[in-house]
Length: 374
Ligand SMILES: C[S@@+](CC[C@H](N)C(=O)[O-])C[C@H]1O[C@@H](n2cnc3c(N)ncnc32)[C@H](O)[C@@H]1O
Image 1 (cartoon, rainbow, N blue to C red):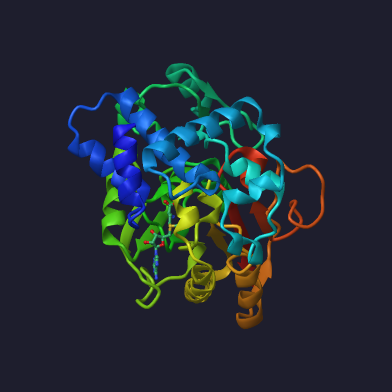
Image 2 (cartoon, rainbow, N blue to C red):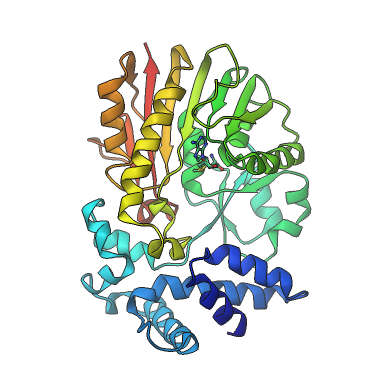
């Protein structure tokens, strides 16, 4: 309770709760793993239930209320009516998102921890680690939901590069890109490399994946992860949307996993619900379109362009897709193909766009659009 209260108090001053938590736990040397985990759950629980709390009361009392609310929801989710669940997000969200009760309900559930086993080793790894389920073999038998309590970062399998912690929806982006062995891809906003590593792996360590980002420190982490995984088909460099692309030749595929408001991660990162502003949506939508137009210029004829954003706002999803189609000729839509959605119709496999909602697979929310250069 003490650590959680200190983290919440500092986060309320405007510092991201996950950063504050990490820093405070590091400063308090030797905090036991279970104590750290309980503090993290309470901090994230606070921001998950913040809309129900009387923010004028002392933080410790609000944390007590948080525990009561979380326990009630876990025991009897139906006792929270659909209208009451509107407290889960700020009211401006209704202007940009078709807010459904199922989405709000999913935001109040603790997020799943997803692992991406290296291609083909999911079933073996699940036995080795224990506490794993592969609930969607039709999507990927290598996507494991970890329900155990081990510190995975201390497992030999992690240090041997046999799995990555990666949300299921992010794994779907790699699967939708479906790069072929030996191809030449560009992941233009690669960050710490979650998706770039997946692409490199799907390409069986052959061909090249160029990973760029405007944040050099993020790419440093990608380098460490690539080395742990033994992936040699990655190259990296700086790109901020203004600089030239990382290579002269055009690419078989370009992925733009754009900076976004992250509403699709509000289950995992509940503090962001109260820090993202309505104006961020429009500002980021214009950045996304600019980056997409630039990245698209590097796709070779017949090559694939994939736009991804872990959000659910209209402006950053269909809005960007419409504006791109209106301003850039020469790209044809490619059906996304969604093995886990049975019915056909818009957004179920025939369309070149898909919005994944967190309640669908227990993942982050994610939007994707796919085109081919004619
Ligand atoms: C959604 S994150 C990428 C996550 C990453 N693809 C992964 O799977 O781990 C978006 C990234 O865009 C980068 N970014 C933000 N503005 C940018 C810009 N103008 N040009 C290039 N990258 C940018 C951020 O640094 C961030 O790493």
